[in-house]
Length: 186
Image 1 (cartoon, one colour):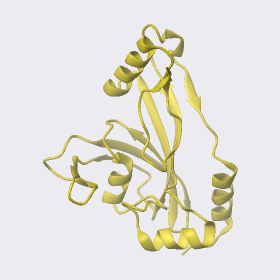
Image 2 (cartoon, helix red, strand yellow):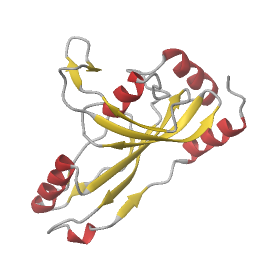
Image 3 (tube, rainbow, N blue to C red):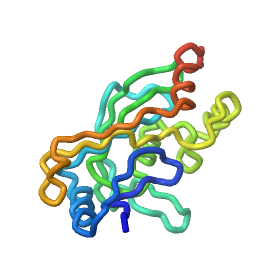
Image 4 (cartoon, helix red, strand yellow):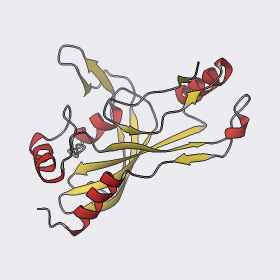
C-alpha cells in the first residue's frame, strides 16, 4: 500500500513523496530523516520585509500546555534558510529551505524573526490575517512545499538521482500575487 514518507503541516499545500513498496518507503523515510540527498523548498508569503537572505538557527520544542511549538534554548536543533524573492509593500514572498525537520519549523522560525506567514492562525499576526481574509479571501497559511530535489540516491530509488520535482502555484495563489504586485499595501 503506498504510504507517505514525510508529512506537511495542516493547511500547508504542496508536494508529498510516497513510497509504493516497503523498500522504497524505507529508503525515502531515511532520505528525509538524514536530509543529505534530498532538498525540500517552500514558498511563504510573510508579513514585512525580511533581509534578502538569512539562516534561522533557533532550537524549538513543543509546549504541550499551549499546543504550540516555541523557540527555546533547551529545544531540539532547528535550522531554516530563507531567501526573499519579491516584496509587495508590507508583505514579502520568501523561499525557505529546511535543514532540519521539526514540527511547524518554518512557521515558528519566520514568526520568531517577526515575519509570520500570512494566514497562519497559530503563529501568525492576527491583524494581518484579518486583512488578507477580508480583502483577498485567504483562509489558510500561504505556505507551499513547491519543490523536491534528490541528489545521489541508492537502490531501490536510484532513478530519482539528480531529479527535481516542482509544482506550480494554484490559479488562486497566482491571482493573489498578481493583485499584490499592483496593490499599494501600507
